[in-house]
Length: 274
Length: 169
Image (cartoon, rainbow over all chains, first blue to last red; front, side):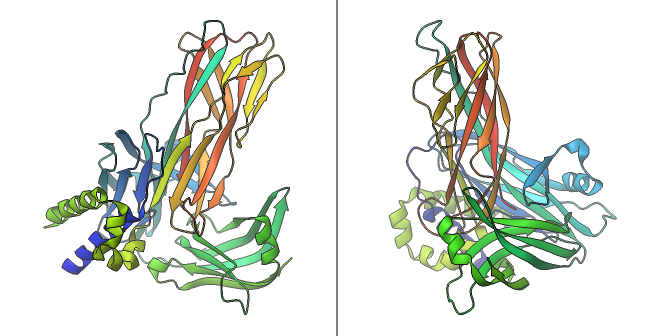
């Protein structure tokens, strides 16, 4: 117990020591850790929110529904459009506090817990925890003289969402990669491939693109998910022009479980990119 | 016990944050922690510039002022545009090579507090970002927009808010 406690302390210490603040931080700037929460047992979880701005800020924590589209982006879902599974997630996850005022460099722990109702069907349940500063619109500076035009002030309300996943029962999934290709649209280049899964839970991990005989991976992309509600999505990895040329030729694309979850291979495909 | 640990963790965080980065790096606790820091992957989002359309003198016909994601202004016909302009910039830091998506409002309405309103459409420079494998900033994106001014738009100071979020999968 003491060891795990000490390790946790040290991890947190490293986390915050590693962050070196850049100049000119605005009110509402924030740090959130971790970036993904999976609850697969009775134990809860904690998420740290830190005010990394230079002024005291009030943050709101809320639970949002999102669905993944076939091209991998996340779409907001209105609460009235929730599926029974999404509604069950909103009902069984509790978290607090939900409104926090923090001075600069002051972290706060948000505790998450789950109370699955009796008879909850086996499956994966997900919602997204949104952290953002509460800000009022900053009034625009009046134009220099009356009748001299309009001035405009737009205040961004910006934040971070992280997925919170509850797993009930024995769930499994397998994944596959198909049809890797380089696509260009004007100045925008991307490596795309189809990621599919079979099973009743999401898959999550990192994509590594390697060339046989070359030690360093050509491309690494972490944090790629295919959520439970989808059977297939397109993964788009933006490329710089020089990366496009480097990728052409024979490659092996591997999809690995997150390093923290063991790093097992989920899917793999060999191909020649043109 | 659990409550005590909770407090102890919070206390340690405060203590760590009180140290300068250099001192913290020199501490043995940091050295031994590197391996387990992955347990708590972090993300930071910082706002380093605002979306600023400058000052506009409206014309007799409806027109638009656009600020590109790169921060350059296109002043519509019949308008006079002055002042400095900028697009909104956000920096993201997090685990190297992580893919994040960016979502937000596509339109925003502005009001001058005395009945005048305007709308603006917003564009984000990226919907998907892969955080860099090295360097001080993991990634950044900009928000530009096009402001729709009516014919003889009422003078005044217009303000509004728009949402933008960085999403982890």
